[in-house]
Amino acid sequence: MDNNAISSFPCSYRMAWEAPFPASIDDVTDAAVWFMRNLDQYNIDPDRIAVAGDSAGGNLAAALCQRLTYDKKYKDLPKMKFQGWFIPPCKPLISLCRHTSKTFKNGLLWC
Image (cartoon, rainbow, N blue to C red):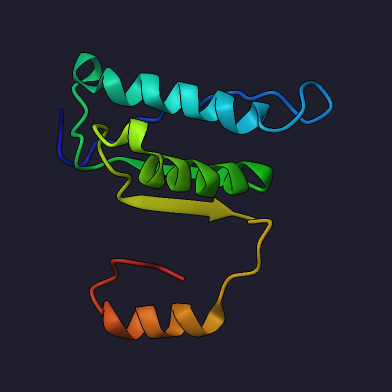
């Protein structure tokens, strides 16, 4: 695959009124785990995986990263290299972003 190419893997999840918590994060986790275990089928570099979401999807993206990082049953999976939140349900930590922007001047984290 071209080094500049981007592949997108959207997934659906059940809403709270369709199924109670933690159904939505379980749906997203199942989709992400399947995708990450099948990266070779799509010629995807496991060192260049990112996750993003809009609004509640941003919250699920953050929860997914927490789950994949701290739940030992996912330790064999590649690690996410970036999280993107579009209209996140949480307020960004402005001081952390300012510190990070100064620390990583080459743009490793954008706030």
